[in-house]
Image 1 (cartoon, rainbow, N blue to C red):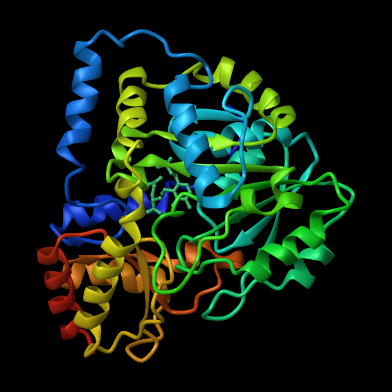
Image 2: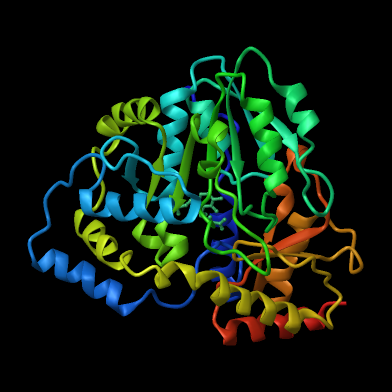
Amino acid sequence: ISSKLPKHQTSIFSVMGKMARDHGAVNMSQGYPNFETDERLKDLVTKAMKDGYNQYAPLAGIPQLREQIVNKIESLHHKKYDTNKEITVTNGATQALFLAITAFVQQGDEVIVLKPAYDSYEPAIELNGGKPVLVQMKGKNYEVDWNEVKQKISSRTSMIIINTPHNPSGKVFSENDMQELENLLRETNIILLSDEVYEHIIFDETQHHSASAFPALAERAVVCASFGKTFHNTGWKMGYCVAPSELMAEIWKVMEVNVFCVHHPTQRAFAEYLKNPEHYLQLGKFYQEKRDRFLELVKDTAFKAIPAKGTYFQLLDYSSITDEPDVDFSKRLIKQYGLASIPVSVFNKNGLDQKQLRFCFAKTEETLVKAAEILKKIT
Ligand code: PMP
Ligand code: GLN
């Protein structure tokens, strides 16, 4: 057979997850919490099933949930999306991203991707006949060189993808970053795909600047979000995207033939649960405590950290320990020491290796302590 993704390799998350299981390692690799989602949320899903919400939902999602999401975005970012025309509930953010790329990337189109980048973007672009055009974020603070982005825009550029708060770096795009992007895109037909799955996991004085809050971005943006990250249930695969109605109409054409709609009882549950904003507004504080605890625990190790500003990932620099490539070092960490992380180079342009590993700190106190005990032994 002729492969449509000839160079595609198994996701690093599957590779490291399997290695972690095989070696019984403390697992801080793939990003998911090792604690439970709220019992009340589980009860709401069960209740919805018992109440008979077990058949297809509307394509865009049930109106009660769409309304809750639209209200949430309005209160946080002062942008009012149309509940009936500008939102779709999806099978996680991964599907939202795939729908947008499939709807808008045509054969031969170029799509600008800022590296390091989450690993589903480029294969999705390639499956649709597009060409990823990569721009590396610079230095250990992962700054975007907007001039370089400008130079990479061509007559074939149909989309640019951003991710803020950013996986794997923990960087959060500043207001200035978003304004630079606005200036670049204002006079173009380029669609912005804004991956904001960690929107509520944000620390210190940092603010999340959603593309929906910037008029010249919102008018061309598909903004993607994930309930899995926000409500500690990544396995439920529930998320959504919002976009102006002309864009959403195209996304619906793809959605219709892709899955038609997503799990109905879970939508009922989230529609109820989202009525209480505390359920997501507390999340930054909750994860900041975990980040701070992890940073405190690793303070006296040979690993160096620049504190993450958002997401549930912390990068640790191991350059004072060894100059081994990060992929080799992360594998050795599992086999020799029993601790699993993610090497950052796999998300970078040309595999750029800054000797950094990504640790997911969405973990219990016990796991964080165990991990730190291991890290202390490595010198
Ligand atoms: N984008 C980013 C940056 C992510 O980290 C993830 C989750 N790993 C996703 C998208 C996918 O989200 P979901 O699990 O809701 O599909
Ligand atoms: N987003 C998760 C991470 O970055 C992984 C999700 C996946 O395995 N596809 O760890």
